Structures are given as structure tokens and as C-alpha cells.
Image 1 (cartoon, rainbow, N blue to C red):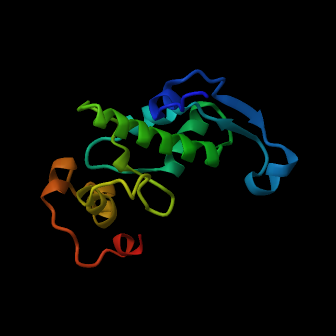
Image 2 (image 1 turned 135 degrees about the vertical axis):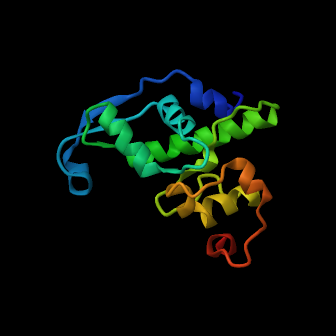
Image 3 (image 1 turned 120 degrees about the vertical axis):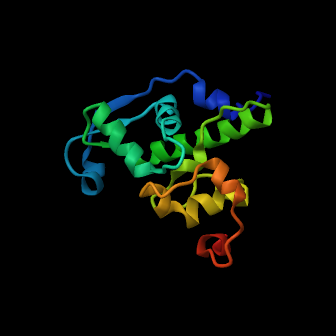
Length: 162
């Protein structure tokens, strides 16, 4: 019986990615004409690491950046999201091992504004991501240290929904 791969093995393992391919007929309806890129997991990780303290990025912004880098029309939404999720779990593994510098995955949001790994995030990070998300985007302040000092909000629609 084979041993399950860890998240870090999935993130840094060998792969034949990135791949740029022409959009086929079955994807044409949804994506339009042109080319698409299937990014490597490490590329997504590198972009997530570049997000500065006090700023946020969405999966769609990561996709746009990857498409531009590879001179493609779009980046595959499914694999980009999956690789961001793998990056978040790999960062959790690193934190559990005691590493201090991990990928700040709490600064990456899904398209709807939800954090990647929301059920595993401490409430301090959720408050910073969801309630203060617009302030972060507009440069209104706060980094990880600021978030720790905040109280849980009395009404946070996202926190109540999960």
C-alpha cells in the first residue's frame, strides 16, 4: 500500500506543468477563443507569497497574472484554484512543523471574497480577511499584527454562514 503524499510533496513534486494549449471546442463556449495556461503549483505559490502585508489578492487576479506571464488568453480556473488550495494546506503543514515564514494564504481570496481555507483559519484572520477586506484593498491598513488585536465582529455574514 502506498503512502499518501503530503501537501508539500504535492506542491513541490515533479510535474509537466505549466502547459499552454489552444482552447478546444468543448471549452470554447465558456472561455471563448484563444489559448489557456494550466499553471504549475509552484507558480501559484510564488504569486501568493508576493502579496504584501495589508493587501489581498483574489484567485481571478492570480489567473490574470499567470495568463499574462505565459502570453495566454486565460488561465485555467479549476487548476489555479486547486493549486492555491494545495498551497494553503502546505503552508499549514509548514506552520505545524514550526516554520515561521510560510505562504500567507489568508491574503488570497476566492472569487466571492471567501478565504481559501476558511474553516481552518483562526477567527482573527477571518476578521481581517472578510470584515476589513475592503480596507485592505484600499490601503486602509492592518497587517497580520493588526488583525490579532481586533475583536470578533458582532455581525459578520460570512462567519455566520459557515
